[in-house]
Length: 259
Image (cartoon, rainbow, N blue to C red; front, top):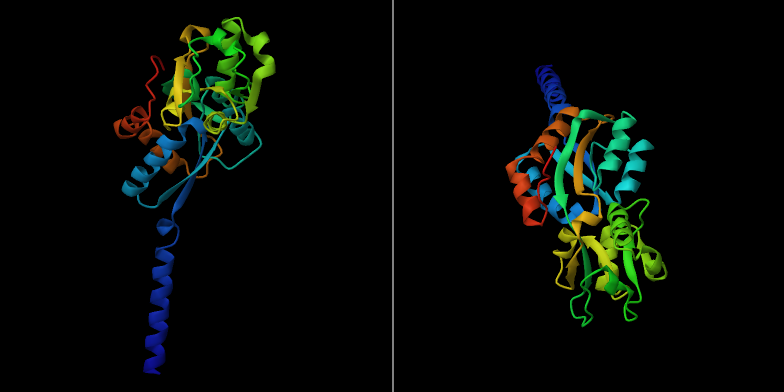
């Protein structure tokens, strides 16, 4: 009877211990949908954040901002959204899927035209893209890829959009544009400066005149449907901290001039 009593007490103690280490001891997994151009910077930030924040694991869903916006509208389980264009965030705010007081412009970027690193072709302005030796030009799909929309604006402003149509190769996101130029499937491509800096297989042919396209800003917002509000707010705040901003700047991003 003494042995049985000891075993019962021990079992009750283990049950209580397991109960005490339940939800509090579980790892919270946050899903962050982010523009493809943020891939490298956010992967480094992930390592830093998880190393200093116990019980939180980050999962990233990288893609075109327009496609990510639609996924959130359709109910995808997302905690934070980082877009490469203000219009995608505004659409979610307007639909009350992101609260106005939980979103702000986080970063800024620049649009560039890239060519293969070993090419001898000279491309210094939009009109050079009309040269016969440049047969394919990669851009993101303007309807869903902000970089593609900025490229469309710039080419229209330069007066060559209509002439260049037959050369365009559309990509699902800015990283696919980079890949097309790297692999020789396109002679030139429109990407962000930050993308051009990620590889030595391409070179910046020229920086696009910033007066020809909408200023490139990256807003960040907390998705209202998050089931981890506290952890989402902590990550939201961290991504605006000096530690995180230093990483973003390292990869070529800058801070927006306003909001």
